[in-house]
Image (cartoon, rainbow, N blue to C red):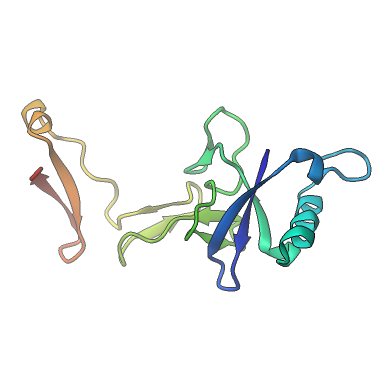
Amino acid sequence: MAHFAKISDTSKVLAVLTLDNKDMLNADGVEEEAVGQQYLEKHNNWPAEKWIQTSYNTSGGTHKDGGTPLRGNYAGIGYTWDEDNNLFYPKKPYASWVLNTTTASWHSPIGDAPDDLTDEEKAAETFYVWNEAGQSWDKTPAA
């Protein structure tokens, strides 16, 4: 099965549909995204160029089975289609975070959360949370 994201005029993913691979075959019997796009336009009354193929096996810029990743992430409803970078990415979690186009994921402006919790803190379910106002990772015990 192939998966295609239905894209709005504002580049948001509206839906993700599956398509039988046989509906993507060109005249030579080779799978082709454009053939799938034409099929979806015909059967869903949505412009062909607004159907973008996505891979169920792609996340964070990698393919889970070691294959070639396709477009950063599997498209989810509400994700953004970035035509310039040829990738899908989720909603920005905080105003200060920046998009890494290699991994198609958001990162804090100071990097990832520290990885320095003690065994006692982990057992007490302590974790780090992003503090947007302070632009820092704050250690917070679980409630």
